[in-house]
Image (cartoon, rainbow, N blue to C red; front, side, top):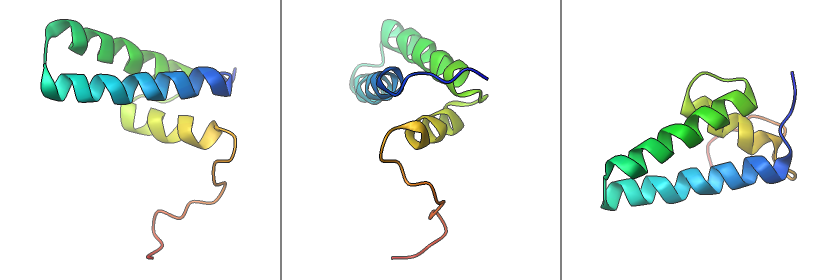
Length: 75
């Protein structure tokens, strides 16, 4: 599988975060379409099928990401 460049993944994550905020405030069809486009690109870039998995996979591929899954650990 091809791996997206970390800069591309970071940009897509940032776009998704910004669009999510815009959608919460505006909810326009244009914002929703752009969110769908970014979500699709993230899924293709990470080899996943849904946006939640794509965001997790993309974040794990960024430099400095934790290599261990600590999601079940408590603080």
